[in-house]
Picture 1 (spheres, rainbow, N blue to C red):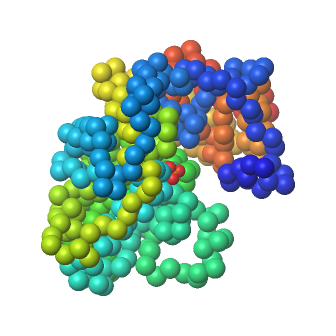
Picture 2 (spheres, protein in one colour):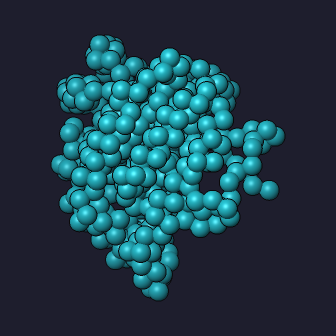
Amino acid sequence: MIWYPYEQMKTMKSPYKIVNAEGVYLYTQERKLIDSVSSWWSVIHGYKHPELDHAIEAQLKQFAHVMLGGLTHEPVQQLSDKLQSWLPGDLDYCFFSDSGSVAVEVALKMALQYYMNREEMQRTMVLALEHAYHGDTFKTMEVGDDEDYHFVLKAYGDNPNVLHIPTKISALEQAFEQYHAKLNCFIVEPLLQGAGGMLMYDVSFLKRARELCDQYGVFLIFDEVATGFGRTGNRFVADLVLPDILVIGKALTGGYIGHAATIANRKVFEGFYDENPDHALMHGPTFMGNALACSVALKSIELFEKQDYMSKIRKIEEITRRELEDFSDPRIKEVRIMGGCVCIEVHDPDTIKGYQQFAFERGVFSRPFLNYLYAMVPYVIEEDELVKVLATMKDWFAKK
Ligand SMILES: *Cc1c(COP(=O)(O)O)cnc(C)c1O
């Protein structure tokens, strides 16, 4: 049987079975649902996009996959060239992986090994944020700060190599003051902390982090697996503050195939680039640089640029503000809106129990968690469809 994610299998309700998907719609046998989650925030162009389908089909006629160990190919070279020219600053060195979690692991390994290659063995610590989410593998769980993961991590006791701070400049300055000699990196989900509860914070925090990282020689890592490709209303938050290492995933392939990339700047790359074989980066996911994934990622970026997705995202934010900014209810703690993300945080998780089925019956797929009712819609959504997603949220509070 299928073991489903994040579920107590004994009590989980049965999942909706999808038989077709097109544009912003998921189809079950009986119903048509707007996907307000974009399949975990990745399907930015909608489903069954003719140009994305075609990009994959064309590559499939050549070959689906060859490994990058000792081999290379056109789609991976083109994607790496494209990312190099498209991403800001000297984020030019592109390491591909099959998932966001693995790409974050690679970023953390780069930061740690950079200092080991220089024999600065005391730089073992990672600074991270409270409520952070960076993936589900063990090191990403450690740098993450998810209550549900603390349970299994308890087996190992407290980890002295990871320090979590709130998104307050005073806490940031204090952490650097105290630990700068031991830190190799500071990893953040910039501006928007997704799985931690769609928490939003100010760019001034990142600007100060950049200064402190420069001052103390600590690498700044942006995990833009969720925030990348426009979700915050910025193309990448890296366009505002330049990190040393950027991690992208989720929307990279338009949600077609799992793929991710860890993109390092010149300084990081040069920390590995010498005559010593021990200084090489020892990492190589089997499916890194998969040719189908690279082909569809290239086409996805082309659509993003040519069809001015940034203005689509501005429009989504505008409509969301119009519909929700002044919406209030005593059960609501806060309504947060940033770019293509909206979150209604409630005081009591029981308030949103049953919402998924309520939305389903009204033609919207939603997946609230804990105290958070949110939407991250595909960017191709039409105004009336977006209004319907937001009205469904409001109706829930009106009905009870
Ligand atoms: C989803 C996510 C990841 C993990 O990506 P996977 O592809 O699920 O492994 C890492 N970081 C952030 C910020 C994410 O939202």
